[in-house]
Length: 308
Image (cartoon, rainbow, N blue to C red; front, side, top):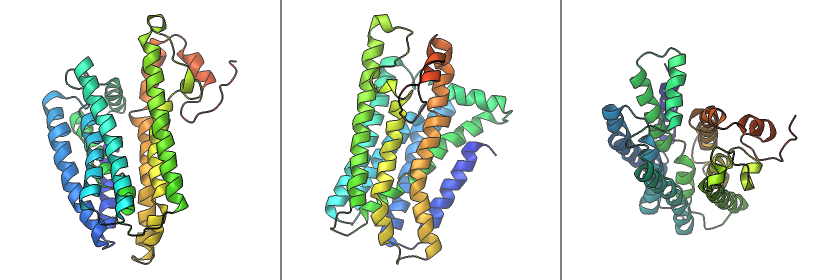
């Protein structure tokens, strides 16, 4: 059993366990979202993969799936209207920003519709080195793992916030939304700095180490992880409010599953389709990249080290 299949089973188990809580507003959202995500991923990612062999279609399915979580929160949740509108808007903004960006890139470069993203070529290469048999089946499992993440751990912080009827605003919520907003600004800034750098002809083949890229080799990935971590922090009061509604084991599972959103994004953004796959190619294309690796943190920002 490969990593994608394991993730599918874990996320399906989390989704099933949360249904056992019997919290009606939460289970209704989970059931509707499961149908929405599975239909979306089959039509937008799985069928195109079956026809072309390219995994990159998941870069369209996943963000629009996140946006659909936001739409469901706005349309179906019955918590405090202000909280519901805010968290639904956050999910919509996260998803639409990345989804529309993926479509724009696909149209401009041909990646996704004509060629494969290097990170998915890297995943195929890793599986080949591991001696995986039934390669296409394993690749399909990794595509569907992102669908199962959308219908379980990534949706859960938003759903818990959206069903919370309390009109009182917690400090946890303020801190979480502030972290999300700061992370969103950082991610947008990092992307803009990178685009300005590579647009200059004199920087062709050079390493982008300006602005935020001076303190992290992947400030965009770090910021994306921080976006989801902010949502998890904001969901803490909503999780605490459910303590008396379910048994202790299920309540703790809810909390662990919500934290899974942050953990899943970290694993993905560092190991699966983020930093490590990107650097596999960067170190081969850019002569100074090894020096950049020696002086600059990979993920968490910090001051540059002195070159040895």
